[in-house]
Image 1 (cartoon, rainbow, N blue to C red):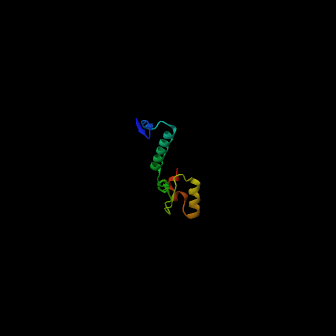
Image 2 (image 1 turned 120 degrees about the vertical axis):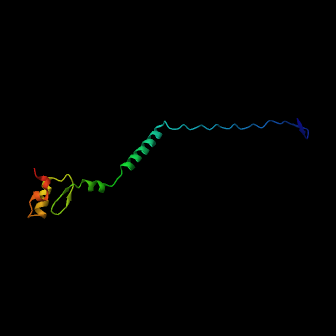
Image 3 (image 1 turned 45 degrees about the vertical axis):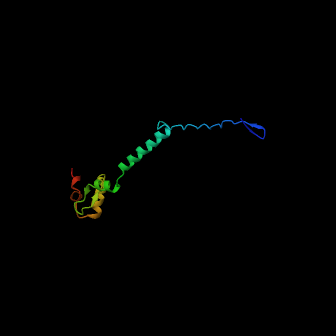
Length: 103
């Protein structure tokens, strides 16, 4: 003990503050993680499937008028072919323009 001016001073040990332990974060497993992974997968699918619609349309243009060489999409009906032949080539026969319509 120490004495200052006749008064006893006691020394107390200084209390140390306890450090809080940090909680380790667990990876994955929650609904948020599942949703994030699903978004990433869908984004990859969209990138892979992305292409020009014009390219696929050009490939589908398989019907061709033999007189003027105009192309038509593969789903064009016989009625549309007939309309084209009558409007553009009145002197030519329908089967001259579109030989694939002969049965």
